[in-house]
Amino acid sequence: MAAAVLASLLMMVVDHRENHLETVRSALSIIVAPLHQIASLPTSSGEWLSDSFRSRQHLLDDNKQLHEQNLKLKGQQQKFKALEVENMRLRDLLDSSFKIGDQILIAELIAIDLDPYKQQVIINRGGNSGVFEGQAVLDADAVLGQVVHVDPFSATVLMITDPSHALPVEVNRNGLRTIAMGTGRTNELELPHLPNNADIQVGDLLITSGLGGHFPPGYPVAEITQVINNPGQPFARILAKPSANLKRTHEVLLVRALTSPTQEPSASSVEQTAQ
Image 1 (tube, rainbow, N blue to C red):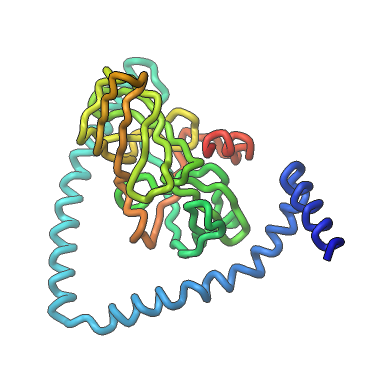
Image 2: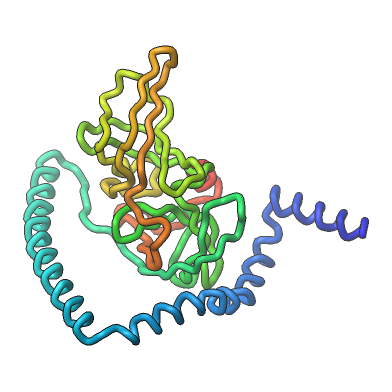
């Protein structure tokens, strides 16, 4: 037993400092990948049964609602295209090299936590699909987190609400830039180091600022829910609620900005962003 404990400690130290066991971990992830799929079978089977027993009228109502929503989105898309063209024209006048659009990859969530002390999940896309460490992850509403570990057929996503995660954001109303820190609670972010006289209000929308290079700019993150000014303290206490549905998301979007380099970012840069 003493020999086993000593060997375990030695392997953890070597892996933490030199990452010599990364190849072994990637190989083992291939073996564990089927277990992830098996573990998600109850959820997927329940959804399949629920969909199978829906009434015809319910499906017709859903189809009508989706059709109306599709028409509205198409109308909004036409307006956005016009705004994009106008924005491109204005930026060309300023000699700006601006590109519109981001590359999107859809992945499904496997609801398994690798670490009970971290808010993270596994997705069914990995290095073979082009996923890389530090890649931004979104749901249908807003920013969800970022990839912190990549295996050949899966990847680990760290949620923006994890206590070790920090996200550069700005207030959409006035462009005020700050950092959104995770609190360990799925419905709360904190904005530290903002003075009491900062121009920020309840209801303000926080979007990604693009600083740091991992999250493309302009994606919604959270909404300010509480601003507490304490004259006895140098900074205000500011809380925000994430706009992403962290508890009910089943599918996510992996985003790569078209202006970002094709090479994967280094592990050190990812750790700096996540910590």
